[in-house]
Length: 393
Image (cartoon, rainbow, N blue to C red; front, side, top):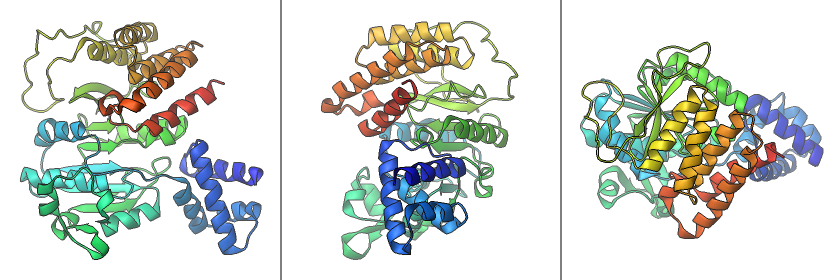
């Protein structure tokens, strides 16, 4: 079974860009056993057929991927989108939710747009899993899957369904387009053409680096200048691409589509200077990234470090992140970003930083402080750090 499992994992990596961790391999092992029993095939023959039969390959992808989500996951991100981003998008508003799983994210975005009073908007949700898309199209959720929805939103956007479940109302579903899409191989979907905002959260950590770079290149060439990409808080893209510029948004950062692809990392016109709490910058007017109040010192240093890393100034980035972890030694993301900067610099100290991030994460877990994890779940960060430490030996 081990050899067949290795072959199946390699097939999924080649066809879908999936880099399975230990948990993913366990799910794939179970999927192989189930499909083998259903078809009466040994595992090796099953994998050989999956390479030729699209339906069987899709069954293995569905079994290996994890669709874990909720409505308005990481509420601070949605608050910032509502207040700072959506009002700036031109009509008709198009938003792409990439890796939408069971549909919670696209329907959450649809609720925000419905509440805004905008007309003619569209939300496009895509996922590689056909099983997840079937659930998203059904738009029916049991009570335990409704966390994150206020009583007001439940009353306005849900209707009773069978067995005590609730379904998203047709007036909202009509504005949501759902389609199968493989981030690792497919061009951006036609349905999302003209999107000014793309959410791809908690997805890229499951792809191998080459697949992620390919997706980011295709996305950059497709997006209009100034369009925004929202990734997960711990999904730093700065060691993978210089084609997006980091800009502040709400409690964290988003990536703005830059005007051109630099042939070599271009230095900033001047070194980034940490913002001081007493000197709030003026708010911007008109199009462009939102201007927000100054961040605390550690957050400003983190922003400076990420900007330096994006420009290829790894020594400067390492210095900034070292100051971040000095100011906040229990901060998971500070240690993680330091590890990414050291990794980009080819410094073996990256392993120590990733281990420190894992230790900080384990200290954070009993406290359950969501803000310290940037909206991520403990198990998601554990998987990413386990992959990093496995890569580093």
